[in-house]
Amino acid sequence: MQAKESKKYHHFTRPEWESFYLNGIPPLTEEELQEIKSFNDKISLQDVQDIYMPLTHLIKLYMKEYDSLQQSKGLFMQKYQETPPFIIGIAGSVAVGKSTTARVLQMMLSRIFKRRNVHLITTDGFLYPNEYLLENNMMDQKGFPESYDMERLIGFLEDVKRRKSPLQIPIYSHEVYNIIPDEFQEICEPDILIVEGINVLQLPANQQIYVSDFFDFSIFVDADPKTIEKWYLDRFEALLDSAFLEPNNYYYSYATGPREEAMEMARGVWKRVNLRNLEDYILPTRHHAELILRKQANHQISDVYLTKY
Ligand SMILES: Nc1ncnc2c1ncn2[C@@H]1O[C@H](COP(=O)(O)OP(=O)(O)OP(=O)(O)O)[C@@H](O)[C@H]1O
Ligand SMILES: CC(C)(CO)[C@@H](O)C(=O)NCCC(=O)O
Image (cartoon, rainbow, N blue to C red; front, side, top):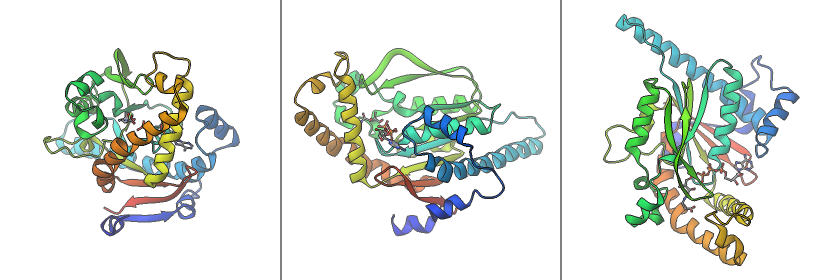
């Protein structure tokens, strides 16, 4: 972390962070932990207890303040206003584990706020389709700021805050490696919306409204780029294994050809596309996050940074 960034954040080691949750709130029961495990077998239950419990508690405090400010504003304007949904952004590199973090958070928030609708979306759905990227010679920039329809994403977030419902957004498939035509994810009356994507903290030069203007809390999932490359390659191998029997899968020809050639190709894509994207466009947004989770090679979270201002 750079000097400027470290001035902006309180730094907590894992033991410090986990101690913030001792204030009379019981930890999850064994049964609840097993439920989370069956829902997401990737996550370490120790992380759920030590990291995500204090984190959801902190988000609860932010939500309380948010609700109270909305009410006070209503009183000031002498006009009743329904509180707009609370939106949480999750940023970080390709393959750093944003979706995994987002799913665990969604599950924990749904448990804490039983009467609230907690929805989760990824900004992958707002990527331009491959056909558009090919036409504009942008296939090697998939994931770069210009490869997303940011106006559409901003329009969607505006609709969410205005409580327009139901809303539909496009779906991206990693298996097909493209937007699935005519299929949509429906978002119906969310009270809390988690928005996960590499670009959620970016400030596009030609836009007056930023995606992050809509966030009431934001998280950056961070790790060493060398470690992330390994996760990317591991996930690529897993995709190859599942592509083996599916001729429609984007990775089919790689899956059925020599493995070493396929891995060489993936290492090239990492270097040429995803690492460049991380260094040029994603890491520079880290200091916009309210909270940074730093992961180690075994996926365990070792450090937490919380913004001072
Ligand atoms: N907490 C975790 N424990 C173990 N494995 C994990 C964890 N988080 C992520 N992984 C693994 O790391 C890889 C990347 O994770 P994930 O797909 O969640 O990343 P992502 O940031 O959402 O990526 P993308 O932006 O490319 O969709 C996957 O293979 C996933 O299974
Ligand atoms: C869809 C994104 C951009 C983000 O999730 C990423 O997973 C991706 O496909 N990047 C393009 C380069 C690659 O094939 O990894």
